[in-house]
Image 1 (cartoon, rainbow, N blue to C red):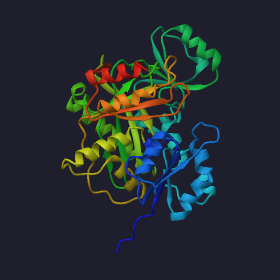
Image 2 (image 1 turned 180 degrees about the vertical axis):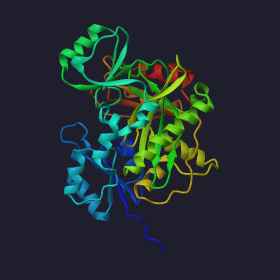
Image 3 (image 1 turned 90 degrees about the vertical axis):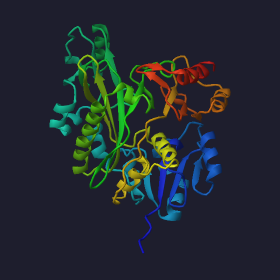
Length: 406
């Protein structure tokens, strides 16, 4: 008889990240106590552990890993540990406790994701897929009278990326960070897309290409912040040949990651240069992408209607365990989610907003965050919310108007 796989405890700041599959005896969750987390725990009381913060602010992954309730949850069933993203800060905590960590090494994630070291790691693939770029110290950048994009080695939700329109904007950064290394490239106008990719021991599974909703008001006031995904509008914006090209890019990058020992999910972000009609790679997220959970939810919905295959999260777990994966990923061609972030004018959302959106047929997750650009509200729809690049359809406008009414 085949031995049952080791149970997993997913430890996460936000429970939504762990809901790529539902909790059960072999898959448990440790997370912060929030209203949404309490609703999930009500459904799965034996398999969700909620931790209270003494300060009122949600505990980060490192603090959750150190918490006695986490130790008890893992020890009680001898589970392996899974986190959203392994880092140089979290990895030593897990090793010191003697736990088995399923995530790939933090050093490999850093090498791949860092905008500077990534160039060397990519090698010929960088030449093939990246737009023209320069790695330089900020003080040495010479203004060429054309817009440029400046990227720090690290960034989150677009905060590590700056669009420089004027020489004055460049000088401001040079005064603040004169000796910092960065990557610069020309500004590319056009729609962005993302795809979740699973690296298995013997294959690369490419998920469903989604349009990346970026910099869209009123959801954010940061022009590079990703605020959602739309799987329905992809094929009206991209030709099938362009989708196939993105998939080949994903396989090429995934194969290189596979050879270096990566297993499980990563995210690939691309942009189409409308002027040149060319698709370029813009970012590799060497971790479980944030859109994984909802893509997997949509895949379960499609499976309930007779479509066979694996969800992206199921494939992620199998790959991390080095289990054989024989099925393909379930295709998705509809659905969308959008996040209202904390902006300079939107600091909170009225308690009436989630209920109003739920009455309109949307799934809603509220977050107790206050930091600028953090998530306030996640709204999910079984149908698309984008009319085209940068423009909401009627469902999207309905969501935006409801949020603004707050």
